[in-house]
Image (tube, rainbow, N blue to C red):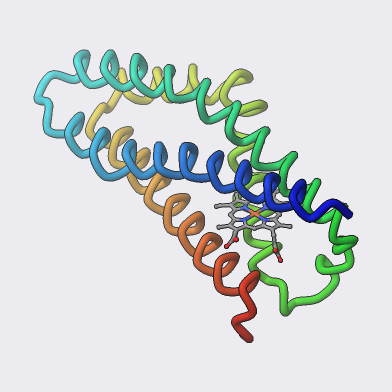
Length: 159
Ligand code: HEM
């Protein structure tokens, strides 16, 4: 194994995670709360779809890069067997977070989620954005927990 290549994969992994989960944090803690303060429902949908649509592309690219660099590291370390060991729960959690986002971004959104949210937000904007905020908070918390676990676990913290 060329150790430099492994370290470069780790750098790429973290850069992608920063751009991706940082964006999710912005959407969750800044964008959605400020949109919810707008009194006009049509404005809310327009702003959300415009900005989240742009971030959606960035999220797709960074999700792909995170998954590829993560799989590369597992291959180089010959560490796939970690999936059978609960001590590496943080690897399971990283993979779960990655899988949820991938399914939402690449499958559910293009298939129906985008259209469904548009309909819900047109019918009852207050409720739709409240549910949206809760979903984002749950995903952000899971992501932060995965980051905490991965940082601690991969640097020798014994859980
Ligand atoms: C399929 C998805 C993923 C795979 C296969 C994967 C795999 C890995 C591997 C193998 C490592 C190095 C572990 C070690 O050195 O012992 C790692 C580190 C890390 N990953 Fe992931 N990962 C994935 C997704 C994610 C996601 C979604 C996040 C963020 C929510 C994340 C955040 C991190 C962090 C923070 C580290 C620690 C880096 C360090 O402290 O040096 N990963 N990942």
